Length: 286
DNA sequence: ATTCCAACCTGATAGC
DNA sequence: TGCTATCAGGTTGGAA
Image (cartoon, rainbow, N blue to C red; front, side, top):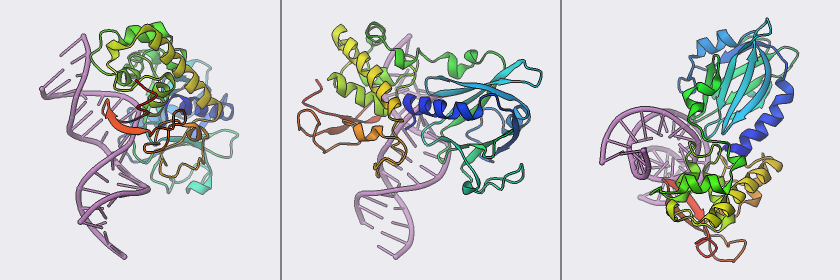
């Protein structure tokens, strides 16, 4: 569920509280899956580092680090996966505080104590699809980042047209492929396709230049709008009364199968495209 | 080279 | 009521 807008909102809200602060303590969970870098190494290498700021590449957050002497000392990479969340938390989550103890919530995989902060930064992820890695040197060369295409926020029609040209797969698969453009997930693929009137199952090579232009515009605007209203949290998709973000209120098709299309009043359908649940309006999208 | 699909994991829910 | 089966999804890595 966290896609580019949710990650960007997270970055913007978290940065002011961590920027310039020194990490005074690190706690990790026993879970194995989230750690691309061994938990012990994360604890040892992160302690004492200063966070210069938070960047973003697609759905990845990149914490720029500096050592005690003021030299750049690498990057903490965080991917939220599907259920990951980065929050500034307190004892409500079962952490005794003051450098002692372990969070009672087993889903908290990383806890950063910051000098001068009462509350630690927590990375919580029940399904453990999220990832934590510590990258020395040039983060961009890490395989996880090196393969990513340009940020989807800047998608241009021409670039989308060339990415789609000659492909035997569907246009939705092209949007979801992070090597083409980074940041689009299932929700915003469906929403952007709806806004541009393109059916998700359309063979990518049949997309016209005009459609590519409209779709790229739809991608940019839907991502920007979602960021504006705080993203959408649908990990709780069966109770979409919107506790975290507000964008799910504006979803035109995602998780709306069987409901009326907001444009034509036809029925929104759900199928499988690119091995994902896919929502669209058969009348508005051709 | 490109596309497809299983696997990773947990929690919510549908069905029996 | 309580159990089991199914599904959700981002990414990778291996198969087709």
